[in-house]
Image 1 (cartoon, one colour):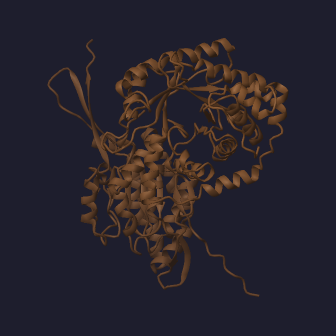
Image 2 (cartoon, chains in turn green, purple):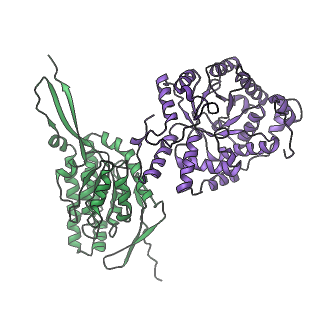
Image 3 (cartoon, rainbow over the protein chains, first blue to last red):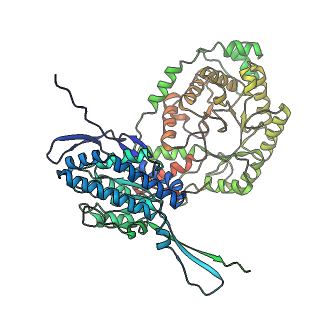
Length: 287
Length: 340
């Protein structure tokens, strides 16, 4: 007797919970060869709105952790990612049609990148902050602070489906931002599996919210949303990203432009692009 | 309860209650009447409330609903830390809910503690009075040892009289839940009658009396129905769900059951009683469910400030965000409304 296989229907990850799309929609995810892989939730603009609310709620707690503590939490995510390597390799092989060796290399790169960014948590302040030269008996310090809620359009398409996502999400949360990320529409499974890792790590719910579905449908709502502080358009090559940038200017958002690649190369500037500089004045003690 | 009982316009509550009860008002007659009311089908009530909450209200209907909600809000601050300054900023918000949009309607009233009434009246100035001033706003005061109601009758009456003397247009009183739950209905009845009398102004007009049942402490829908009847019999102009200090506060099924009593009373006497759900209503979506419930239970003529109110503080901001979303076409943010 043959057995019916049980195909998984994935959900969205909003506010630390796995939820179906408010719209009730799902779409079929296929492998590179066109075989059925799974059903993924097709998020609507209202899911995006809910995700922004969840992210806004999470920012205070996440940003209030000490940088060292944030780093520890992110290291742990990398550990869990390493532990579930086999699942990611299988999804990458299926979704991208690459060899097992190439898939393994991509997971390696993703783990390494995550660890690299985790290390920046308690270091980027020293590098990006400064004690300004002054001409008087006081200090003048400039320090970067998280900007708040960041909407990310992860690299779309079926290449670097895990690495591309990690390369945009990790730098955004290093400083204490919360993220609403639109995963790759054609290869969302590594992104959705990553949420299962995030849910069981110590990352507070709502710091990373993952929406699967159409970037073209949701991006205009996110870039215009007044409660989003910055948008990362890395994966918006195929969209009218200049139009999105213009729309984002309506509420003076920070904008990171597309890279034209399947991933965002690791750089400190990706962290600092999503921060605000606070400059404070303080007297020197007069002893 | 089906035959129409004629009610004389100036009937004192006690006379009118005696007419409905078919004899003098006493613990016994009240108990016979209230406990003779058919019980509430809790499952049916909750199912009905849930089904009324599924209506889809969109675009122009939603815009209309949002404006209606604002015009029905009792903008409330009931904190131990309230100051005249806090009340002034509350009044400013009540008069101009959305500074960026002059078409935004004003709320119905501000609701404060008794000692803050003078500050509220002062801050409102010429805009004081829903009926007397164009675009005016009422001042509602909570009284009778709000929120517990645990004080002697004389203290409660003095509390009420002071608020009315200071210029309160509406008094939100709490019933003695202890007495009600012990079955001392007569005591609760007498107290409401006495507080109503304390709402009398020197010119003979009365401040509107809202009777808070504190449904979160009444435990059953049957009790909510009985307390609603009791409050209306005793002369309350409004019945209000909760103080907002006890969880659960207003819920849709509880409000529905109170609306049903109001509907039955209207059929019985032709008199319209108001309903005020208070506490726990924080989103426009929730508030719209209440509008639907009111329209479907008592009728749309209840959707006016004299017959329906929302007791809320954070609801207004959410409604404003939704209004901004409708007018600008993109989602707004808490940065675009005041921090209360």
